[in-house]
Amino acid sequence: MKVLFVASECTPIAKVGGLGDVIGALPKSLLELGCDVRIALPKYKVINEKEYPLKLVASGVKVFDQKVMVFQTPLPQSKVLVYLLENKKYFGQNDIYFERSGFVGSFKEIQRFLFFSQAVLNVLPFLNWQPDILHCNDWHTAIVALLLKNIKTLLTIHNLANQGKCGAKEVFDFLGFKAKEEGEFNILKQGILNADILSTVSPGYSKEIQTEEFGEGLEKEFLKRKKDLYGILNGIDNSRFNPEIDSCLKKNYSLKNLDKKIENKIHLQEILKFKQNPKVPLIGFIGRLTFQKGIDLIIKVAPELVEQNCQMVVLGVGEKHYEQELSVLSQLYPKNISVNIKFDALLAQKIYAGSDIFLMPSRFEPCGLGQLISMAYGNLPLVRKTGGLADTVENGKTGFVFEKYSQHDFLSCLKKALEIYQDRKKWQKLMRNAMKKDFSWQNSAQKYLNLYKKLL
Ligand code: ADP
Image (tube, protein in one colour):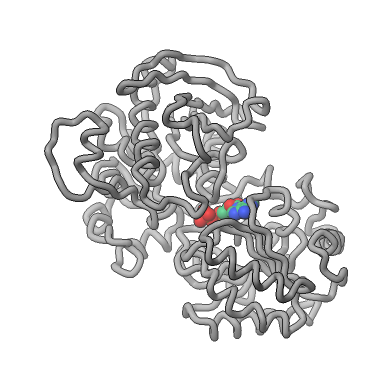
């Protein structure tokens, strides 16, 4: 069975968030199950060519009025092949996305991904390898399901917040269609209506999106496609997110020598210029600083956490006002709060290993990887009961869960966690429970394989 993943991100080649982690890991597990999987990705300007051995496999492929070159490189630490599509006009400028906070609806970005989607289809006859299935991901490549007629498609929705909305006329003109449609065009919606099978990244979220509260205006479409909609939980890449072998850590550790985790905490406190004291609770947050992630709740409870003698580290980029408000907090409380407005994969690993509690008070969360990674590192997640967070964190067993999106409920959950933190024995029991959880990709990869079989 041959499957081509078509996506906008793939860790470590081009990553912004969880989508990249999934595309960089799931294909490896599928390959182990005997599925011939490859990945197609734009060759963005930010991809460092020196890091990847590139082999030219096609050139001069016509896409609209442009030419595309295709390079092939193995996904690091695996045999999965990645096709990088090169075109200066559409992929040669800017970052992966045009705005740090994610998609803001610019037509330039829509053009980039419409072009990429069409380019993948035009390039296929030149690859010497024909997929049985195209596995599309999010709005960026959802249009493939509409453009393609002779190959089966699976569309996975990682995040509904961005849908690729724009004027219908602009899209049809760009794609060279004759249609004279006016009004709005929603790329993701077209993918939902046209893909052969749909999936999303947790069972909980697959149910939530059929409701008005979480459907982001597409709940009717999901209800229409209900029998073709599946929820498969994301996993994490054990070869990357594993405290026993993670080369980013000061000291590797596992369930067998948990005490070594403390050395990572002391190291992190040193980096952040905090007082080095293993007894002080260290609370971490890593993620996009957006409305979805509940950043306003974190900002609101921060002074109380300082009051409780906690240390807190935030790592992320996103909406300007959150970046500013968080930076003000770190200036007010430099001994207790460290705010790092950047993307930094190395610091992220140090935070996963060095902190005690990991915050994810999200408004909604399709799956969430932060809580899975933090559990693997014995860093207890404190999450809101929504989507994939509700599916993966057990309150009082592997982490802490609060239900209502309110400062009061968030804070009282935090206080409960801090109370348990004082009881070392109890805390270590929870850490062990979390670290024993298996969130590897094997199980979920088998479920994707079953979907592929259904498609054929
Ligand atoms: P989302 O996909 O909504 O961004 P997830 O929790 O599913 O959120 O995945 C986020 C992934 O991106 C995690 O691996 C997290 O560690 C990583 N990440 C997010 N922001 C940063 C950052 N500023 N620096 C390093 N890693 C980050």
